[in-house]
Length: 422
Image (cartoon, rainbow, N blue to C red; front, side, top):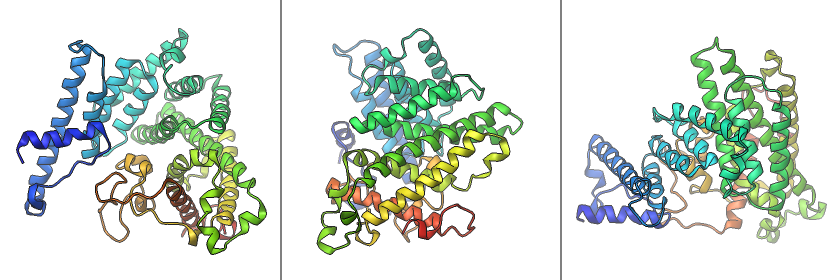
């Protein structure tokens, strides 16, 4: 295959979700030395970044009749798929978002650019600049208008406003009010309509914010602001997870006792009938938060810092978690649920996302018993993707399995036991 043909094949990914094949023609990938393959991978990654830059320049310099960021974002996205350990593609996507005045996408991509194995060195400074822009836009009454294309405009504006304030690590008078408003409106919106990518971004922004704040604190343990920022974001994650769990609990409680307790074989084929609309909307982000919980569940000594609100929220989270899993286990017997043998959408998007990675969560991305080998992605050629109903059942199995891991925790210090979820 000629070089131009290979590039053309890669560019097909701009028009759909197609994977980049990391092999040579005629199946000769195994004949390439690892160090040569790594350098080739970096070269291809940088080529895609440069193609994205060139496409972006065409828009900023108004060289095309139509203002179309699609090709630039497409090339950056392909670069991120090729090397998820690098934050460069996310930083470049943030540049596009900033040019569009989309504060949610800018914040999301800048956090993603930092929370990876190879952070983009420009991203931390760009994030601080972005938060200053958010503060300025809020003061001028422009924040909601600038994100007018996002669903739930007010919710998005309040959410990024909350993050811009928490990032400073300084107490602010409207903290409780703003946080409660975000949680209440999030619950209302999810009952009425799917937030799709917006909710996904909320969850990953929250997780990344806490992770990055913890790094700032560990690098400067004398900084009270770094510690406070970490506690702010830890509390925000707890409350967001708690909000989603309560929505799940409300849906599960509407299942009749006869239907909930049915374990007949023929009923197993219709398990997905029990999944209500709101639950379908929140299962993917709940699965991400389940990963976050596995990583953070042992952080329980919050009373030592004197934050009564945080301590109370943590107790409420454990209660809601146990109740939700109990209801799930009753309605969806784990032995009847399918296993995810490929990466679901939220898995494929979080490869290399450090805030969710631990020894316990590696099972979400990697094949069991095969060290360092990723599961195939849902869009890979040759992957037989299951019906969305089946994927929802895969997610429920994942939630129950995570609960089992916590219930049988070897340290035995967590406030949940096996009888609570079975």
